Length: 480
Image (cartoon, rainbow, N blue to C red):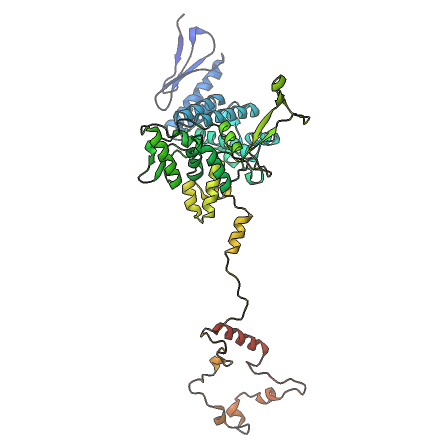
């Protein structure tokens, strides 16, 4: 059956039905000249007419600039499912080359956020909803750092939505961060000289000394050492170039002579190409814990169940308690590969290196990160600092001339008043009390003012009070 149409002129659009039945359909051209066609979902013609008029009026307002047409995209994106936006964000993170492990963490946190808030649109992802989710994570026992990491991912996702023009503003920036200093679950401690020497002695016989030296003397992370090639090591300039590190930049670090010697021996032994990896085999966490155990840094303890009984493994004669290697000290501080960076930051502080220089060596964006998380100074360090202070002098201070008998110069009181005014008449030349009254005091009531009460105290001259003496003593001290 042919389609019956009703055309409306003057840019008012078209109202019609397909096949002559069903709901009315409106068709119009927007302000850019693009044709749109949409069902009104109603069979009432009057209602369909009003819907068409609404679209035509909105087009006219956008064409004349009354309504900002650039904001129409926000309404279109707001109607999309929130899961689609999350999928686009994860695809963007993978496209720009972010670490796969970090992208997987982002995806897990965002999926957990959507499941808790039950948000289906971008407008549902409000600050109150996200903060309620973070409180739930806190109630489950997560540390402040883990909660802040979940907040960081949510804020980064909304910031990307703003950048890609999916929302106008980021409503999650008002969510406050938790204070991580009051709830640190994993605190690393630096290794002392004896522990480092024992670890290098163990690693030297197994060909892993350069691995630990690169972490302790250059602050390289595991990923840095996995990507390091011989082309990045310059023995002539004694530098190491870190490419595509955590900060996604290129850093050139000075190389310690001990590390340079270890890498030189390894280079001469392997005879590798410049593009080959400096460390072809990664030292795993299991291997590292065994090295720590052999060096006496870690200890082995029995694994127990909920009742405190040892967990047994094996059969027959091979049956034995299950053990694990623990690298925590009595205070709960951890020693791992990343603790080598803490060791480097602490040793730089002990050597008197400025925090700004230590920040560049540690490759941090803020020197406060170096001081707060990678510098651990103890009582012995503060005791050495106190011992370096000069002693306080207990005896009397000697005179500037070097002779102890020399007295400080005496200055008369009212020193500035002894200079006579120009044209002033000396007191002896003005005569005695027999002079005419008007010659000394022209005031008419001089006689009344000179009569004193019988019980009046004598007037004390300026400079004879105790306060003035104190001031003069202060002056003497300053001159001395």
